[in-house]
Each structure stands twice: as C-alpha cells, then as structure tokens.
Image 1: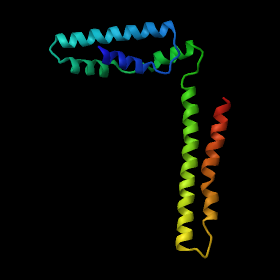
Image 2: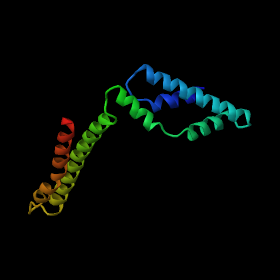
Image 3: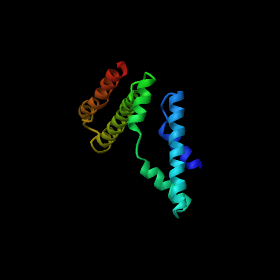
Length: 140
C-alpha cells in the first residue's frame, strides 16, 4: 500500500538516517498495514480503511525526539533557524511595503510636506528587532 508508506516517510522526514529509524519505520508500516487489512476484512473499503488507520495512529513526536537525540541533533533546532530567518525576511518585505505605501500617500496627497520619513523610523524597528532575534538564535 503506497499511501501508508508515503505517510510514514513524511512522518520521518528531517530525521537523520540510521538503522534504528529504518527499523521503526518498517514496524510502523507493518502495523498500519495489518490494521488496514483488519478493517478491510471487517467490511470497510480499502481507501476508508487506510484513512482510518492513519487517523487512529496519532503522532510520533516522542519517537522522533528520541531518534534526534540518538543522532546527536537537538530536536527542532533547524526548524527554529529557518523560522527566524523567514520572520526576518517577512519583516523586511512588510516594512518596505508599508514605507512604500506611506511615501505614495505622502507624495500623492501632500506633496508640499514630506512627513512619511517620521513613521518610517517607527516601521524600521520591526525588521531591526527581527534581525537581532535572528542573530541571537543563529549563534545557538
């Protein structure tokens, strides 16, 4: 059943390769396939049985944390780095859009007074704060 194998592969994505990981994956696949077969034998359609087995299976956060610890990687560290970098990039683009909008409003409606510079300083605190958060987490 390809759907179950794909599901299990997705669960273990991002965990370093090891023999223990492969053993656990194979055990989970076998258990899910047995559950699907039991559900099919009891009268469920195969697709419904696969979906029910996957939903009933739950999460494997504890198993993933143990595998990450065994491989010497702190769980979720890479995800946090990526998340902080994404937050930094989002804040930069968001600030540029806000400053651009302020400049447009200022120059279109009030060209004789340049006032958009003042709120620009307030808007720039957002990416500056995100930059320092990113630097702080990058060092860890």
